[in-house]
Image 1: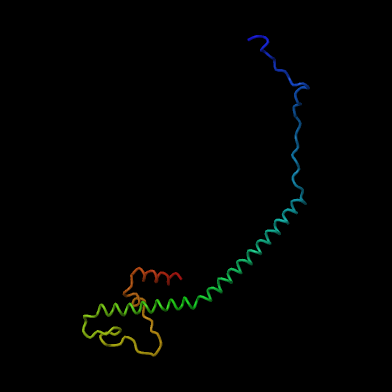
Image 2 (image 1 turned 60 degrees about the vertical axis):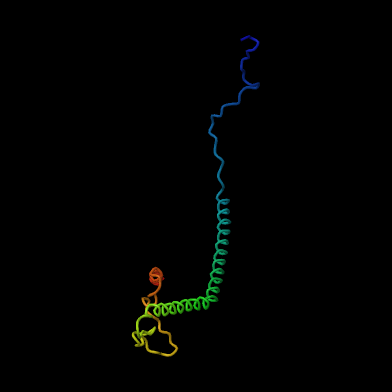
Length: 149
């Protein structure tokens, strides 16, 4: 290397900055009044949101109750229609199964009526009779539904 290419590193003009050796105190945290004010504002806003949420849930519950009351007759009618359909299927299945038995009338036990006639009152069969010709899984499902509901 030539002497012209070499340059000694020197301190900057005016020298290096001083070395900090003293304790640097932390910034003071918020004062108690500021913290109390912040807590009050956040609590008030949260309470307002909480009250609005309660009002919304009450309004939605009232709406759902009104819908339930409005649709209940339709659901009851549909349930009754399904019940009568299953009874009709049971009678048709009984007629199909017993068509080769002489003297068999559907809904009787060898000509003897099973139920006495009591006018327009509906006689509800036992669940085992009701589901006699249905899928066993349907019967099990309904028994579990009745058990848990």
